[in-house]
Amino acid sequence: MGVYEEQIVPIKISRLAEYVSQRKRIALEEALVYIYSNPMYDRLYDEGAKWWYLSTEALYDEFESARNAESKKVTHEEFEFYTYCLEKYALAKGLTGLQALALLKRYDADDYLIDHYDLLHTQGTGYVIDELDRFIQRRKKRC
Image 1 (cartoon, rainbow, N blue to C red):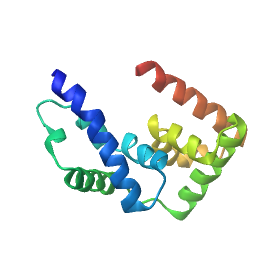
Image 2: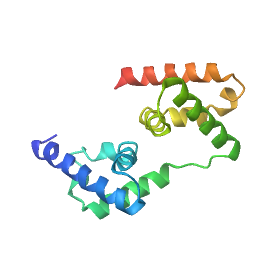
Image 3: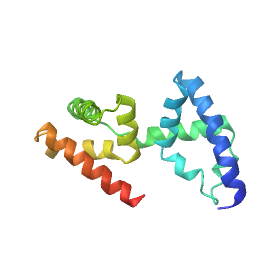
Image 4: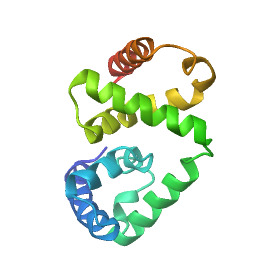
């Protein structure tokens, strides 16, 4: 990656966060969660793709497209289980709901909960919290 990309991407992220905050009427911190948890974020540093050339509005559109393409159909039961686990994890770890959500998204633990719903929803809360911890720790080691 060139020096230019390393210098321009943080500026682009700042501007995009302000734009997302305004468009979605959310706090700047929530806008950052939106950006950092989006699959497009990693592409900003792809020198060959040159996504950082795009305007703020065009970047937002790309982020929305990536977000919509990634979202999958989740059943009502899966969503209830996910939110239950999210809240229980936040309480167990002394986090706010937003902090827990950001953590789960950052390490793809949100997908893990949904993808393994059939098995995990039959387990106790303590087991699921421990499993989330193990999953996140394994992901942290990869990063």
